[in-house]
Structures are given as C-alpha cells and as structure tokens.
Amino acid sequence: MKLLLFVLFALTTAFTYWLRHINLAHLKKHGAVVPDGFGDAISQEKLQKTVDYTFATSRLGLWESLFDNLLLVVFLFGGLLALYDAFITALSGSAVIAAILFFIILFWLQTALELPFSLYGTFVVEAGFGFNTMTLRLWLMDLVKSQAIGALITALLIGAVFSLIGWSPLHWWLWVWAFLALFGLFMMFISPYVIEPLFNKFEPVTEPGLAEEIGAMMARAGLQVGKVVQMDASRRSKHSNAYFTGIGKVKRIVLYDTLLQQMSHAEIVAVLAHEIGHWKLGHIWKRLLVAEMVALAVSYGAFAALGWQGLPGLLGYTALSLPARLVILGFIASLISLPFTPLFSWLSRRDEYGADRFAAETTGDPEALATALIKLSAENLSNLHPHPLYAGFYYSHPPVVERVKMLRILD
Image (cartoon, rainbow, N blue to C red; front, side, top):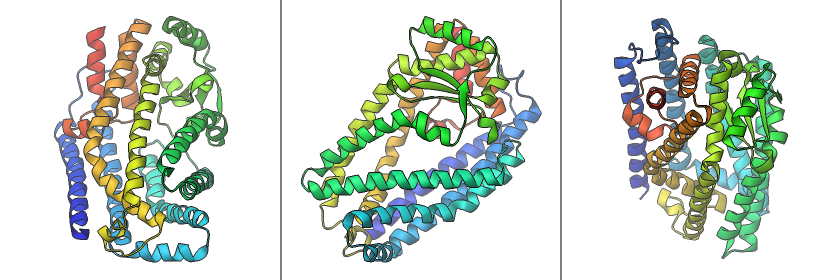
C-alpha cells in the first residue's frame, strides 16, 4: 500500500506539473497577441512584461513546489514522521499539549525552510517587476506577527479539538465540526477589527466625491454595507485589489489605495458593485453553507479513518500518535480532493459572472467594470492567455478576457 500511495502521489503531482507546462506553453504561443479591446491599456511592451512576470512567478512556484514535495516524500515515506512523533511525545505527558507542540513546531520548521523562496519572491521577483515596496524590516515584522498569530490560533484550535476528542471519544467528530464552524464565524467577526489592523491601516475613503457616488450606488442596490474603507496596501506592494471582509453588522468592503490611484470614480464604483453583488446574490452564505456541509462529511470521515488501526500501516509505520495519524490522513485527503478542484473552481467562477452581471445592472454601466478589469490586469501583470484547461482546473475567477467580453455583450 505504501508503494501504491507513493505512485498515486507521483501521478497527481506529475499531472499538476503538466498543467503548469501547458499553461506556460500556451502563453508562449499566444503571449504576443493583445486581446481585442485591451489595446488602450496594454501596449506590446506591457504585454511582454506580463509574459515575463508570469514565467518568473511560475518558475519560482515550480521550484518551491518541487522543494515542498521533496520534503513531504522524505518526511512521510522516508520514516522521519515516526522520529518526529517520538521526539514530540517525549516532550510532554499531556496528549493535548503534545498535539499543540506537534503542529506548531512542524509549521515553524516548514516556514523556516521556505524562507528563501519568500525572500526571493519578494525582493527579487516582485522588486524586479516594480511591485515590491516593502523594506526588509517590514517584511521581518510581518513574518514575526503572522507566525505569532498563527501559533496562537493553532494552539487554540488544536487544544480545543484534542480536548473534545478526549472528552467524547465516540462523538467528537460532531463536536469538533460544530466548534470549528463557530470558531470560523467568530474569526470572520473579529478579523476586520483585531487581526487585519495589525498589518495594515484602514481609513474611510478620502477621494473627494467618491463617498457620495458609492452611497448612491448602494442605495440602488438596496444593501447597507458596514463600511467602505481604503487600505494602505502601497506600503508593501503596488498590486491593486478590493475584497469583502467580515460578516453581519461588521461586514465591509476594502479598497487598496493603489486601486484608488489607478481608476476613475465610475470604475471604482463598478468594482464595489461587483463585491456587493456577492453579498446581495447570497454567494457568501451559500459558500459558507457548502463549506460546512463538506466539513461535516470530512469530520465524520476523519473520525472513521483515525479509529482504524491500520492507518499508520498504509505508509509502513507500526504505531503513531493521533497527531501523526492526522498528518497521514491529511496527505491521503489531499490526493482524494484533487479531482474536486475543477468543480469548486467552476462554482466560484459562476458566482463571479453573477457578481459581474449584478454590477453591470446596478450601475447601468457595464463598460466601467470592463475597463476596471482591464486596468487591474494591466497593473497587476495578469496572464491574459491562460490555457483553458489550466484555467478551468484552478481559476476561481474567469479569465479576464472572457469577463470583459461578457460585460461588453451586456453593454
């Protein structure tokens, strides 16, 4: 069975690398063609820079993936999991504390080993294409804060989960699912006001006249969003974006300050209308519902699998602690879940098209969103020629050329 799992892992990994290959080959073949309607924002020089950036980021991602997969093979198939498990078990007689140490130390080791890729990506690739604005000091501060927050959240989650397992050995899967669902909602409430401000500064939109236009659009949409704020994203990068955060009364839309600098008022309002469309059309709660249904099934599946004494033997081990068995289960689950990736990607793209249509109807100006998307793709050096199979498998948003085409049909 160990050999079979290794072969399955090798085949799935090879398939993902093949997808990368055909995507880059497709870009190499069509990358010199400026899509119809993009000529005003994207010159041949900008298009070539986009191609170069896509190849540079993909090359870095490939090397990082190869490194991570090599570590995974050595750790799981080379016997290091048992050695690490024995080391952690010897540190504490408490099953809960041992579980917390198991995952926190493992995450820290992985982070440390991947630091060269993060540094190279930020200060060589991103800086080389004019995106990075971070200093090394800010990068280090972000690293320390993110690791501290991650360790705290991990300790809380692992501590609670393993305490529930010990408290209710036969029904822990239901209690764990309920706890994680409530914790996820709790994090959606507090993140905009507790965690996100640790990294960025948020303030009301300062662009003169923009707040009034946003208010008028929201009135037409019939939706009250807690706040529309701008974020000092330019402290770290020149990339631009907007996103929806929070839930209930604390929901808000965040605009990068870089986006405000790049777009007209009409385009900004159109981007906001798109984000509001996700809420108005029920995409947020529907995604939460689907996620929780999947999580419930996964929780029960984990309960059944972890209770099977033969689980360690699948990778050639005789006996392992519960955290180590959970690692094996997570590895197997990643192999099983890969075929479902295109389904969830398609569902996400369907929602994005719906939000685009909502924005076009609400603003009455489909062209504003179309030009906003073109500017976003130009400023972020987004790949304008992804391979259809690669995009179909991975893309959570439709390729920008297709989105623009759809919007101009509506105009």
